[in-house]
Image (cartoon, rainbow, N blue to C red):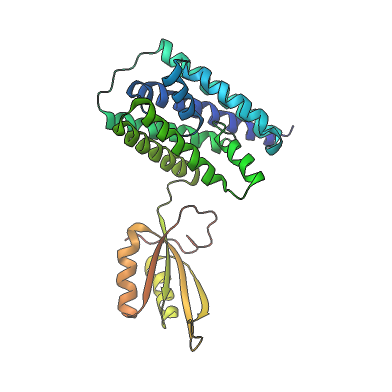
Length: 290
């Protein structure tokens, strides 16, 4: 095993351990006391606990082990090994915290929901970054996708929706359904942020007859490079040029003013950049301070 591989696995298992701790904290200290569910197999195990009283960690193992066995041929061995460690550690920590740790009771349902969902999301995101799975929901999604046209994201959505409906039947309380929906939303948002990073850049498309002048001004005044794309309008009666540039959100007002000063009829479109890699669009010219 090479040094690079060893470092890679150390990094993976470090993320998995931290992630498992966070999921256990979110479940044991925030959601379980408030009887609010989350998504995925943690949410399924909480439902089993609410219905039967079976410890949440044990319920998580009872759910995950068959799913992992059923989906073994759909995942590679290293991923499966890391996922087993993740599931065992998460289940163990949840039951240890439930039985032996004390945490001040939180009376606010809103705080329990948001903090619980967010902490679980951070933990699940770290486990995913550690090239493992926190539970069997993704495995279910892969199995379903292999036999049907249903996309993994749709399967996960169906599982989460089922959990929410079950919460309503168990507690006969519409408020808990809504709190659980908010918890799942917080979890998915934080997972996305952890995986993709907190990207603060925006993608800008500028359509103008003066893209060359605008591009030079952006390079000179904002210290950013970009790309000019040639195109045509829908009727193909005239050529158009589109300026593509990535810029930080705080520089958009300055960019807007710059564009309008050169061409007040220019079309400027601002889009979210969910993830970025590389430097070719970012700092080819050192960004000047505003």
